Image (cartoon, rainbow, N blue to C red; front, side, top):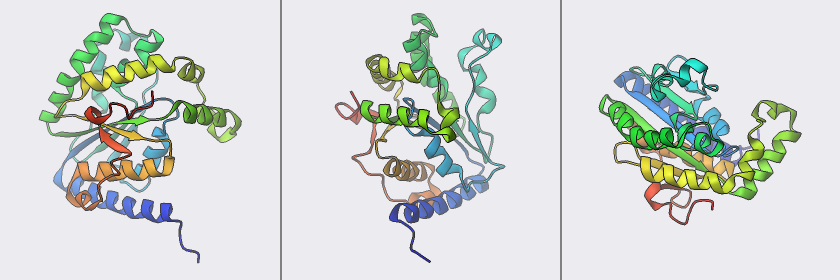
Length: 248
């Protein structure tokens, strides 16, 4: 039998640690919430797939909400997300979250300027409530360069297995690149706070990004996860350290 590739071997080792760490969170009754945000094709789906592959199906949920209904648009903005928050012993991963209002919505005109400003003010207060109630909140921004995004978006169109990844908004991702960059910078500046900080991950190299995302999550969870090596500082860093390091 041939030896596994270095990436596959390290991924398996980290996935074993994830299983051990989740077993510990279940025993401890801990509530874990992981938010994945980033531009289209930044690698959210792939990272989530590797993270959840061997986790408990009963205590793990991936949430990717569709476009809000007419009724939901009339609710308190955070209301549609609250039912999906973790209970004791659960791990919930949001594949995009309330931070739609920090990026896609203002850029595409899906919310008013007043709603956007209100969100940036409310999000830290909302998250403080969650953390104070015992939720371990991990917020990840997956950053990708414009050239790599263009390559991945073009690849999607050609691959029939990636049909469900293709979106009418894909073209806007490149056309409105600068607007999305501006919204990203404002979001990270206004909603990074000590009780729920943003962690940025450079994702042009998918495999390195996945391994480092898992390392960061493990160390954030604690327990057996604390045995994981620290992520690569060149690829994973706090939002206040992002100046000059984000894709322009």
